[in-house]
Length: 308
Image 1 (cartoon, rainbow, N blue to C red):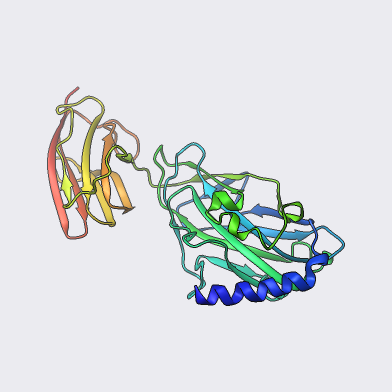
Image 2: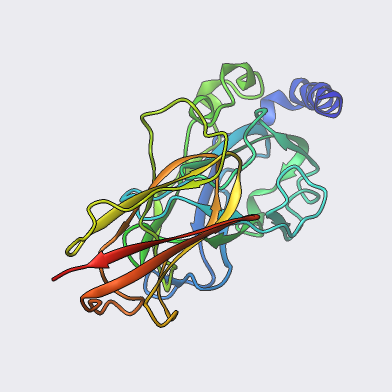
């Protein structure tokens, strides 16, 4: 907070000195260098770039901008921000081609708590101020790069992933940050949302149970219902704290045939559905199966029966 306070004072001084040179010509566009025909292979880390283009004849010397990642169809619920920047406010963000230096800018988070926590919709916001800033001839020379891993899809091996601009209040910044720019001088134009189809994702049928405000005190894995079943069955599990969770289905020979969950989950109560198919989408045969959950030091296995 002390550091941000110093930056705010300096930025305000610059704002007062250079106020008349502000302009409304800043445009933001986005793309992913890994995209092909709107598709991105999500089996490894992906990059999403935001380009800054000054379309005006004057200098841009201050403003706020905020963005949000989302999955409109709910197919993706969790992402991981890959730390590439070290000790930084947003360690998954890189400032490319002198974003922070060629514009002589102060760049700082525009709200406490906007930390890109990986749960979609995910939000990030900046406040910026500088003198001299970006000349109009510097179109698309500076940009921001996000480094992300898509954790899994809730609907299959593909999912929809979008980036859009959001207003500062929606981002969590609130009206307290409007001092940098009067509304009529808002610098942001954004021809979004920008959306991609992410392929080759790990699929999960895990859903957070939202009807309870009481967090569990212990790890737990419940018996499936119905049992026997055909072709769908559900079971619940509980996490008293954030944990890496893996849930697999095994046949009577001990061979793993399906992974239902493999990722990081917050504390809470969850339900899991199994549709009776294996990892390649083939229907499992009638018989006895086992489901096993690993979460930290906790492990439990239960039996279930598919009866056709």
